Image 1 (cartoon, rainbow, N blue to C red):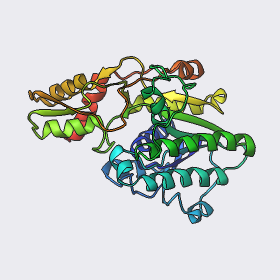
Image 2: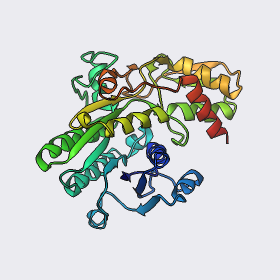
Image 3: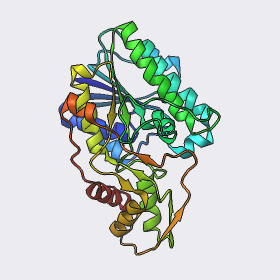
Image 4: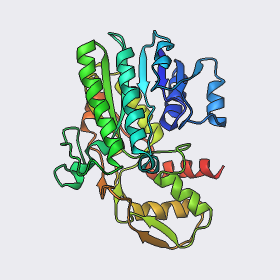
Length: 317
């Protein structure tokens, strides 16, 4: 099988590329390296003869005119993500995420099979408004409290992508699978996300240990499990035309308890100092994975403590 990974130098992209290569497939990675990194992990992957790398800006039509064809599977993982990035330049988020999706839809040919990476942030407003249950399934309503809030720029860009791919697939004859990620974490995800950010501060000896959103809960999913779900969905014909939640619903964790785990794994005995959470962040998030299990038989395999341990060890190195 030949796979095209758009944004393959980023966090989930690199782990997905490794999995596909391990499974014996050929992989072509396209990235502009504005978010993805050309680091030691990527260099090791790119050194495999089954991996090709192209530098390209997915918002530029010239990139698409030069894009090779003949792929069995296509994955759109490229996006501007992260709360700090979104709040710093929400207009860029809308532009980059939307244009990347729309250019890809124009480029796709009948019979192509594509995976679009979306997010639980799409329905976060409905959870906060109390009109979507937790654990949350794919049928949850969509609500935007305040379109002027920078945080919603990311959710809106992804919602547009979901609609564009699902309607575009019916109109143009390609197959689209939409996966909504829920708090995926692991090695090489940058330092702006909860678990690596906590790990870096703990290893730096922060005392007391500040815990924003200490009263919130999340269901964290280790990246290897998320990748397994993606691979299963792309191998399942019935997943075409579906929005499917991807995550780990086997245990919600309080952010304060997560902080205690990170402190223990880093050898810190600092006391916790609760602090307000980020503006617009939901108080609780957990996916309902009934559809994912029904389609693929997926079951998370990496418990939180083991996943956090692997992540902390990577950041320690």
